[in-house]
Length: 402
Picture (tube, rainbow, N blue to C red):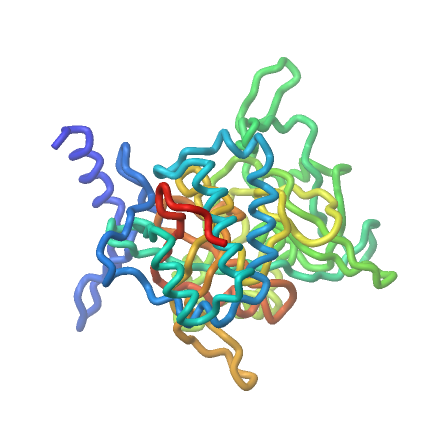
């Protein structure tokens, strides 16, 4: 084995977080879900054992909004600029397009249930994410579009702003953040969230004002929001850029400090806690140094491919290692509303890889777009489940399905 790869493996093992030893229990090892790929390793591995290919029958009975979502991916892949991101993980741009068109043809032909499952197995190769452990383990989380009351003018009620992208922020062609351009032309790192907020660095560059400081933070984490204006009109704001700092979750800090127990942790629990302790919002949210800037958008929220996101059909992955816009298959346990109660149930479904996120890095992470509003937020905030992530590609050299 090459010495560089060996050292890389040893360093990766050291990144595993080891929990505290309890008087009656063993050491608890937390998987390193964000562990990066080895040098030269692909994020996807072809499943060659037919017994390890998942059963698509159940997912093939619920195809709501799948065809329109596939067409959104094809719309993106028609752009010549999309070709520069291929090949990735061994997948070419041509194969990505052919695969989506072939699957759309299967759906248009009326295949459902067991028939569609059989057709997929006949015409498509199945690839699995190598996950965080090279065994396919992927941590699923959820995100959504919140709906908040707000105003484009500040007032006693609306005093917490979302900011527009500053003119001195320097981005690369793929949206990567280079930093802040100084008066002398040099580029330096942007300040952290704490500095931006405490020093009010972007006063005068506000886009919209909200009534709650933690709602501002939620919008930053989710990357978009719908704003219910005083006149009742709804306006959409979406992600424009960030300050270049890595995202850090505040959930673990709240648990560690005993504010919310790990068994009760959810977005709803955080909203309740900060609603009762508004003086604690800045203390915890400023532990996340990433700060997000926004822009007005028309229509529905869009993902990183600049296509509208679709509930339960759009996923966010690390776009440096996964093929953009391609057809995926989710296999996990997710919260669902049953008779008014939120329960965890096994879930499998088709989705399109159309978005990315600040915390979504490496092959062991995937974020599912849940939808808009409070119910979607409650479900998204409860998703923290392991599972498998598959991708479907037309068999090499095979004809397009009709």
